[in-house]
Image (tube, rainbow, N blue to C red):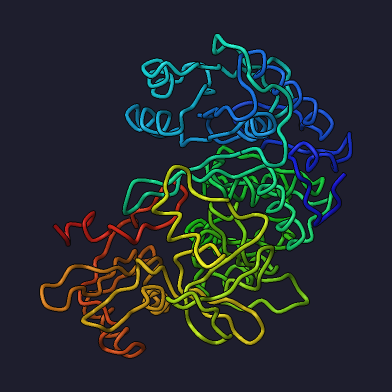
Length: 515
């Protein structure tokens, strides 16, 4: 049995810590149906039953099973059951039929799990000859309990529980600038990352995480779900982020923490400011932020309202999520940084592969038990990303004298204005200091002489007004002239990806500012 902070080799071992009768999965009573909580004992039985059902349907170790389900307890438990004995490939249920065809074919999925009545994924699977396994919820089932029906029509080549070296999860990178890369993560990768996160957050059996992150993304799967269950704690599986329902969930569930991306935190903060007494009464132990840079203004606002520390961490799919994290009190957490190494080794490196001293800016590189062994069928990407004995993240950063990492931006996002290198994150933070600006994102636009010019898109706070000239003048007092955006667009909403992160790369084209 794995203790807190000690990585097991297999998911089935990682999930052995929870007490038989302790709550593992629950769902808000205000959701579409009411179900009693699922205990750790019943969860382990459900996982064993799911592996047996998959084997009977012709699916075993190494076989890839796409999961197309809405966020909620069944999405959480089906991931755990599939990953324990096969390879889970969660997909965004809002994909179109053509997108499902691409991902099912690219993944070489042997089966896809869908809910009754599902359209696009089921149709795409039939067209490709991929077996459809239908997930149904029996009457009186606890949160997350389900049954599978359907078959591949073949025998499982490798039945039983997976080994530590077997793949457990496969995800695609975002594919913002190129064809998305396939990232296989082993049982050992997931176990190491879950243990790292549980140790960083000092998770105990008494903790409860309110999960608002999508469970087709590494943040929700490992950062919220698996880290909690590995500590014998519980997870409240919501239908997904909803700023209007967040307060009701908090009041009902009374979680000890939640994890979200910055845009979600901004929406939560905006609504919580209307009722500060309620926010202070939630009694959260901490709030976690990851997957994108958290503006220091948002961190300060959350801590003031919720009366708890906000822990910003740094993760990515290739690392099975967490790489660094700000520590819990009494250790210092530094606003604007993503904290200290929290699992893998972390360093900065120059273009020639030399590890840089603290205080010097370079590419962030990592290595450790949670890091994928490599992209699938992509030797070109592997040659550049896995070099000099480290995984190259593509992020620029500086590690200070105390080991805290500050990310200045993505290598591909740095704006090159006639040779002047500009970090868009620096401009974002200056924009957010403007009293009328609620959200902001800075990006590059093509320029015939300079190569690239600086532009920004902002969303004003409700009832606030500001002109482009006013915003540029405000920034001119805080930034060097070459960093001030030449174009400021006012939008009702920032374009975001499926996990709620604003999408900087390609934004100029999406907004009609580039061919």
